[in-house]
Structures are given as structure tokens and as C-alpha cells.
Image (cartoon, rainbow over all chains, first blue to last red; front, side, top):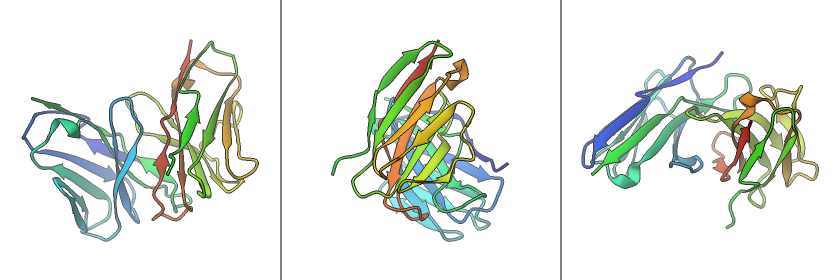
Length: 113
Length: 115
């Protein structure tokens, strides 16, 4: 079945350091979405990428969709304690498409002062 | 604008008991989703409704799980009987429609512990 894997599983950084999480799908995706889940919270939509090679920025966050539309990355520049949480990528399921999402395994980010 | 509401927030039951969760989506959202999130994993879609009809329930363990959205607004998810491996957070989400550009908004979830 369709698998969406993320690496690393965990990342501890010092505040001010950069952070990157990578997302890899076993199948080609029509689009990729990114969510952030704070500890004890619920997933919150961050962004959606649709085009091959697309790059989008949100302040210190840079999102990229691979040329083959099977991988994506999220890069945070100069992390802050407010960036703590688990970051998930999600892509449409092979069966059904639309908005039926398969979530990745997630990368948990901890930021230390 | 009010977000997705869920209740209860926490539930502890013993195995083989029954439990039900309630979800009220954002007003006007036609599409409603139930996800199961096991600790340390990403959310897994259980069932998707479009208005009051089921669009996808292929990952719903139908021998013990059931869900309904009778009037196309509120929804309930039931587990009967519960197993230990059902311990998880059950998240409800809604979106305006079912297209891939329709953002999903998640509720706070119900944390279920099965003893």
C-alpha cells in the first residue's frame, strides 16, 4: 500500500539553529500538504504544494515539492521555541484521491534555549 | 468563526465496553472526516462523509467501528466492543468540500484509553 515516510523521526536543536524534515512517498503525489501538531494539540494546516519543483515560503519556513512529485521538504531557519511540535506531510491516497489523505510518520522537533 | 468541536475530550473504558464520540464540524462544511491517531504516529483516516453520505470507509474496522452523520452536520463514531489497541486520539476534521484544495480543519480530539 501507499507509504509516506519522514526523516528524521526526532530532532533536537538549539534555538537559532536550522531544521529540515524530509518526506518521501512510495507513489507519485498530485499534491503535498504540511501540518504542524503542537504537543497535546491537533494538526494545523500549514501549506499545500501542487506543482513539480514548487517552492513556497512562510516567514522562516521554506517548503519544497520534488521534481518527481514523490518527495518534499520543510526547512525552518533560525528555530524558535514556538516551532516545537511534530511536523507531518500528507498526500492524497492512491485510491480515491481528492482530499483523502495519507499522513507521513512525522518529525518531532524540540528546541532548547 | 467557531472551530470543530468534539466531545468528550477524554475517555477511559475497559476492554469489551462500548464508547461513542461526537463531532460538530465548522458551519457550512460539507465534508467530515474521522481519523485515528495512535501515539507517535500520523493520523489515519477512518471514514469520510460528504454531507450525510459515506465517501470512503475502506480503513474503518467495520466489525467494531461504526459512524453516522444523519443530518449532514453532527457526526458520531462508535466502538463496540473496544479492544486494547483502540487506545488512541480520535480526531474529527471538516472541510468546505472534498476537493484537494479544500483545507481540513481538525478538532481537539478525544483521547481514548482502553484498559
